[in-house]
Image 1: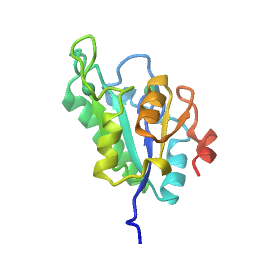
Image 2: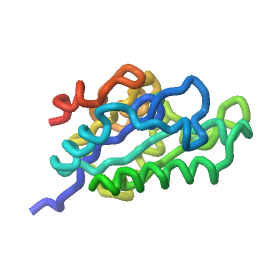
Image 3: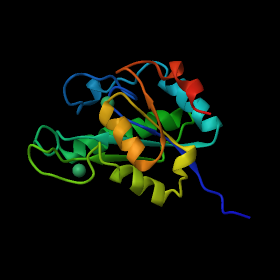
Length: 164
Ligand SMILES: [Mg+2]
Ligand SMILES: [Zn+2]
């Protein structure tokens, strides 16, 4: 009997979960959950996917926002979703920006996905990465998960059927 592995839907943050603002989203008033997100995440949840956010937050490295502000937004996101019966297992983010410091976690690298897959015992072959940027898709491919490219702020309900 093979040991059971989990499956996950990995989600980019800005432009997928919340409104892409063409600037770093660091304050609650700019953090607007996109239409269709709650409905889509409930469908993924009901299909037994873990929900994990994978985000580049280079504004931290650039000094445009603090880690505390970003952590606060993520706590807020997890609480809002939890109130709707949706568990976001974890939010992984890269605080670095290549203008300031190089790293191996920033998308299009796949280190955040690999960390998540190790921690939550996730089978990449049954998992997806939904993102609105080419670097999301690249990161997903490197990690061996299926990828779904959306337009920034497109309703996830339009692609929900792509997740088996
Ligand atoms: Mg994005
Ligand atoms: Zn990084």
